[in-house]
Image (cartoon, rainbow, N blue to C red; front, side, top):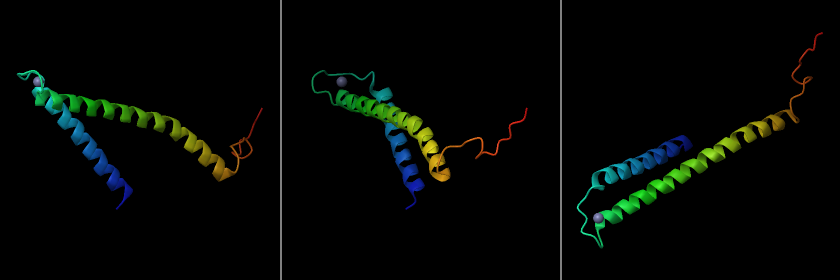
Length: 96
Ligand SMILES: [Zn+2]
């Protein structure tokens, strides 16, 4: 299976889990709570825990992408040319 299809399926699953958590929280936030051992409160805690975890995962993914993206381009450029770009390799003419 193609990597893009797998990534799309995982992203769809992640979005569905987050959306269902939001809906559950929105519907159950003002429930009549009997107090101790309330199953709705347990579901709310689980949903909040899921959303907190997903938030941390998204922040970590963006952080890695922000660091790895430019580093990858820099390394790719050095591997292709054997060295970094210079004015000579770029064929820049300096005129006075
Ligand atoms: Zn409750």
